[in-house]
Every structure is written in structure tokens, then in C-alpha cells.
Image 1: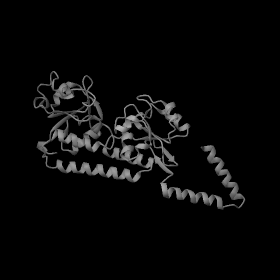
Image 2: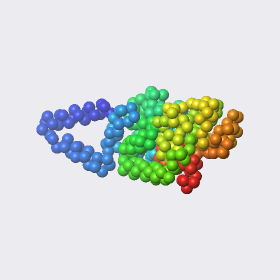
Image 3: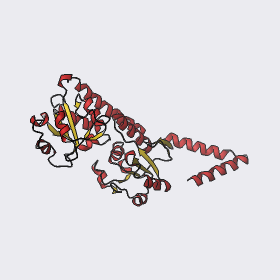
Image 4: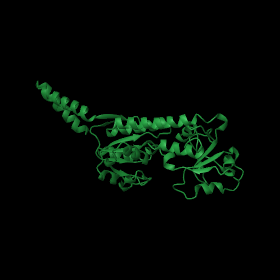
Length: 318
């Protein structure tokens, strides 16, 4: 690509030297017309602070994380996706796409699919650095999407992907719809008085290694939005916590987020030895919400917040 650009620049300089200006002007005019009709080329600043120039609207896209895939489908460009990871399960159509690997991606397979664009992710950028460079060396555009930990971060991801695939307007509309949904939940939560707010422990992985969502996560942001107190709000990020600490915090409600992948999630919590006097267990206030809705940084987070709200405050959110 660089060699081709160098040749084109040399030719243009020769033409100018010979007094032939019409050809460069024509090319500039054609480029301007292309930008006006398609919006391309575009420059996307990705999560690694690199400026990625995408010359034409991508017709073949590979997604390296389920959240990216969900965004592309939400922007009505699912047909352009030619490859996804083993973990992509939504929407259903995504499950029929070519698989390019799980924890380890198959670079050769990806190149064979001849994508125009690869949507990578900041969370795996280091571990896949060499592979992503191979893709770039093969002339494939690679955009590393930010690892969102907040609503604003998710909006940024959606807008970045929207710009990269030529759907900035749809991305703006999707973000607007999400903001409206969150605003409606916040409005409903105004009826919950401070002394009525429930303490909630969110368990994102089961024993023996229990992890929860502390501050600076979108689950914490969801809890604040719907008028609940995060029992792990003093912890940072996705934190590992021992059972004794949870019992000591004595939450009013326990919410698990792994029931979709683990059977009997609620029963496991209710039956834990030593948890008999925890308020959530005594009052049978243990619920499961769909993991992908509340832990996946994609366009369905608003649905996840609503499901969480209905589980914690069924009398308020109906």
C-alpha cells in the first residue's frame, strides 16, 4: 500500500512539472464525490490511540469479541460479518458464522476469509498483538475497540464501530435509545426513598472463586441508576471476594449473573453453608439475571439494567 501511494505521488509530481494539472484535480474531485456519497474514507482513532484510515465501507468484517458482534448487528450490518469467535452467541444468526477461535485466534483462517476490517478489542490487544500485526501486514484494517467499563465507555464503543463500518447515524440513534431507556429507569427509581434502598451483592462467578462487580463497572452504574446500594461498592472493578466478607456485609439481595451458563445458580447460593443468616438468603431474595445482558458491554445493557431492576424492586419496576 505504501509503495502504491509513493508511485501515485511521484506520477502526480511529474504531471505538475509538465504543466498538466487537470488529472490531479479530477482525482481530487472524484475523492470528494466519494466522501460525499459514502462517507469514506474515514479516520478512526481506536483504543490504542492509533489513527486507522479506512478507505471504503467494509464489506467483510471479522469480530474478535461478542460485544463487537452485537453492535454490528444492532447497526443492521450483520450480513457483512464473515467471522466471529467461539463465544459469540447473539443474535442467533451470529452462531452460524465462520469461527476463528476462542481464547486463541486463528490468524491464517482469518486471512483466508479476506476481511476488509477486523474489529479487535482492547482487553486482548496485548495477547493478540503479534497476530493483529500479521493482519495489518496483510493489508487488513484493524480497529481495536475500547474495553468499556461504564455506560459512556459503551457509547464510545458503539460510536467507534459505527464510524468504522459506515453507520455513524445508526450508532448515534442506538446510543440515544439506550440513554432514553436508562433515563426512564432512573425516573422510575425516584420513588425509592433513601431508607428503602436495598443492599445488593452481585455475584458474577460462583464459588469457590467468587467475583463481584465493584466501583468503576457498569453493573455498579446500573445499581446506582435504579436506586440500589452495591454491597461491594468499596471494591475496585471486577474483584475477587471471599465468602466470609460477603456474609459480613449481609446484603438484602444477592444477584447471580451466571445462571445461563451454570445450572441451579440460585439454589447454590441459598444452600451455602454459613449463609443461613444472610438477609438475602433468609428472605429468599436471591435472583439470577442473564449474564450477557449485564456483563457484556454491548447494546443490550439497557435490557440488563431493566432485568436487574425488576429482580431487586419488583413492586417499582413493572
